[in-house]
Image (cartoon, rainbow, N blue to C red; front, side, top):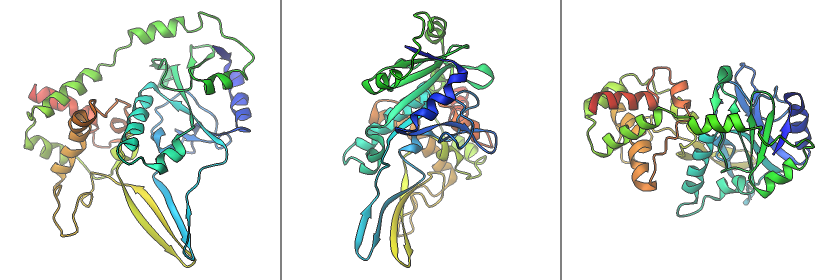
Length: 326
């Protein structure tokens, strides 16, 4: 383990920019936090929830597939420098593991893995939440982890790539530097885990009635914020953009909350009502993915509940189901 003081943190990350395409939480113009590059804002490893989903680094909202000019297609390429992403929470790491498996299922998605393969992932945990809130340590599933113990940043490597980065740090951390953080992590309980699991059981047992979804759907204003921030949402559409000198094909995120999401060419829409689309959004995460992948694909990152203007994020809806149908 290595140690960095808060005063040393910025200089360390700025030095990494020479060798890596570094993405890290910075203060955005609106005062929130977003993944950016050093220099685009003040580095902020701790603070309010990082609302923009970190998995967008590998699956961007608008990603080029190829560009063609004069019958000469050019395939989208990756950056010259190795990508390093700092800022995943332990919950985000679970989300990343899920979409890694999703994009590798069947025909491997080369666009995704062109960015994902070789990328260095650094988690952030400890006393890093809003107003000093606690985030339990991941203990792995990444290359290295920055853990704030209230005084210093303790950097723990988990892979050869992580160890090569920590080798650049001159100061070793005391053996007991993470004793209190480790104890708090072991005792940490997220009460929403039981709620999500119970809601999943109710959906799989088909105990949630149609009128419930109509009630929830009545609050939806189709802002699609839930899909835009969810790290495990993977739906997209493909668009061709024609310019005087070229044609560009790109894929863009789609939202299961929109009327055209499943509308067929003949006009039929199997999700033709907002109630059906709302049911699909929740059922997909808590039941369908449980059946297909063996686990619920909501990992309680908290983003959809934080951004939904009408209070129907996935945890909020799960609580309603548990209260009404248990």
